[in-house]
Image (tube, rainbow, N blue to C red; front, side, top):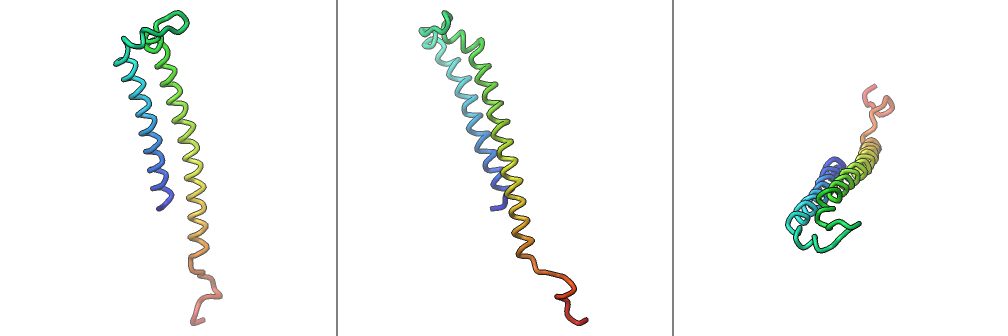
Length: 103
């Protein structure tokens, strides 16, 4: 599989995982708000804390993780492309003056 296809498969996987984390964070806080309000964090009901600040921090962490991971994938893809081009050049037929026939 070429480097570009591997890159896109990895990028889609990272995006799907982080999108799932975002969806679960948003859904769970809203859906379980009554149950979460039984817990307290710094004197505030946990559901209020998550709605006011917690989910925002989680979203910030998701964005940071996405940026870090995609940078890593970009560098890895670039290295794989360079290796593929070097392998192609090594296996390409030589076309120099010493390989010409008829002169």
